[in-house]
Image (cartoon, rainbow, N blue to C red; front, side):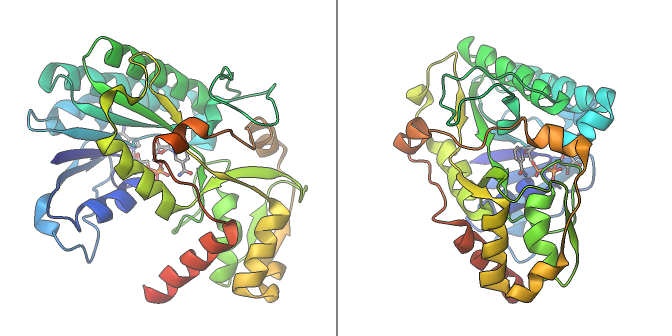
Length: 317
Ligand SMILES: NC(=O)c1ccc[n+]([C@@H]2O[C@H](COP(=O)([O-])OP(=O)(O)OC[C@H]3O[C@@H](n4cnc5c(N)ncnc54)[C@H](O)[C@@H]3O)[C@@H](O)[C@H]2O)c1
């Protein structure tokens, strides 16, 4: 299969590329506005092509008639889109529309796996969100994702593409540096202390709940979507809420102490940031994932296991 990954220099793009390039069945085109790296240590680096382009104008540089599937991961994250409305709209909406148009004309019917987010939801929300809850985003990022979800539905209904929209939970524990996402601390509060560094938690409420998914489980769910029968969701409703688990700040602290040692808690600084709290509190904290589970999507066993897996990977790298 020939697969295109956009936003391939980013976290999820690199994670998926690593998986695909360990399997000789895949040829992968990696594209990003920053030069995308071919992940180190993969078994089949010869199956990768890296193309640096701004997707706003450059979709034609990376879309080929041979494509079987596209993972659309490019984007400006939540704090970034809130801070710069025009940049968020141009990357999250305009570049995605341009990509879909190019795909429609170059490789009609191609499978498109679009990365959306739980941030499409805003208040008021029930305690448990099911697939019938109407998204009412309270951030530019969430609003931009909803625009693209509608495009993916419409392009699929018209048979221009075979789209699937995956609404990801927050992915934690994410390696690397902090990001321009309001949720950045949800990885940082594990990652930084395990690395001997401090992390600021921008909400002074240990009962604050988040909806999380580990990188390992995300990869399983991304690969599953590559093989899902096209008619497993209706032609005009392509959104799937990817399963997560509900974890409180206190629960995350407990997992850190258990896996990393209680001394690591001293590296966590609780300091409220009002601009982030309003975004964080608009998001849902628990979902009914019955539909996704019935399609074969997985959820994590526990957050403690996620932290153990992260620590083990650190020790192996
Ligand atoms: N990581 C999460 O917790 C999470 C949760 C929900 C949804 N998502 C979605 O998943 C996708 C991938 O997330 P991520 O964590 O890997 O993000 P990331 O920020 O690590 O990667 C996004 C990539 O998009 C690239 N990009 C930005 N503007 C571009 C342009 N004009 N042309 C081409 N590339 C451009 C960036 O350079 C970056 O490498 C995003 O769309 C994000 O909204 C992520």
